[in-house]
Image (tube, rainbow, N blue to C red; front, side, top):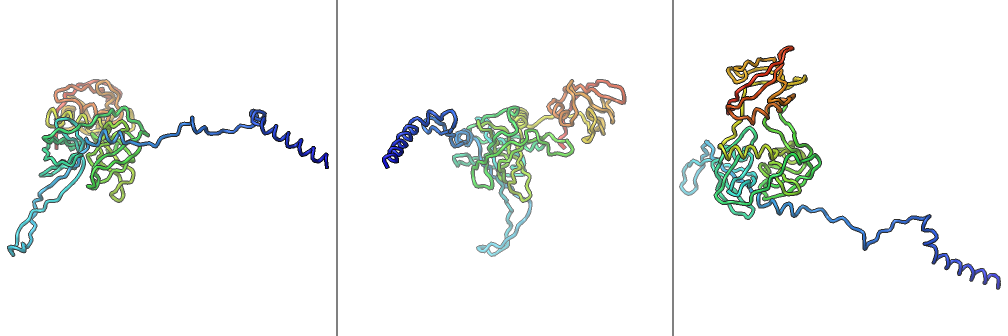
Length: 353
């Protein structure tokens, strides 16, 4: 019994000794990752509050009215006779304040055919707007109100990357200013299958609904990177495929309209094959008595370079010519059969029809 008691006491002493020294003895063999709640850093909740505050006063709601040339007759209960009433539907969209002098950029389709345009600013004040200029080719329009508002800051399309976060701000479905969040999926998207378009798009999955047209697509710095313009949808609502006009195109159109009242684009009268898969651009038709035809260019010629720049896509040539002004000379390097030659073509103003 005495021996058993000695064993128990000895065991208790050894156990206590090991308990005290255990962490030091086994430190090299057992690794336990413990969180130091005092020194560890926890990630903060992501918020774009500061971004929205920076831009919300620069995005406005647009309401339009249009008088149709239709006669609607109704019986006036007071006068008890048939009277005529014009049908005046209303439309809605969004706009972006782009100068401190009251200029507002929006989509052309938002205000097309309207007799009256009303701008409602962030504070809820209403302003009558006048149309300064339109550009149906890019679906853009510039409006002006008498009161100056806070202009938005322009971003740089070259800094926009696939995978960047984007915020769409506008007046969807007439509910007032709304912000949706998304990811940029493309920065140079073409929607025209023929390749004949002055338009390309920033694609985002930020929810864009009817009424968002003309609103702002901004980056997380609150810089304008696009003008929300259209969606791809089976049911008419947002399916996560939205498109915005890139800021570089919007800025060019804005500058042209403010300076000339319209967008002046160059024209040389060339029609090219969008399905040509060789190097260069194959000409399939020429406008009769157009600049290219009068300069000696012929159908089946293959354009290799424009102003010394190699071109393989119609949009590449179109971009160079479109930004040329009437009277400018554009140099074409052309291949005809096995021969190459250079010809200068004087640019004309693009016809509007």
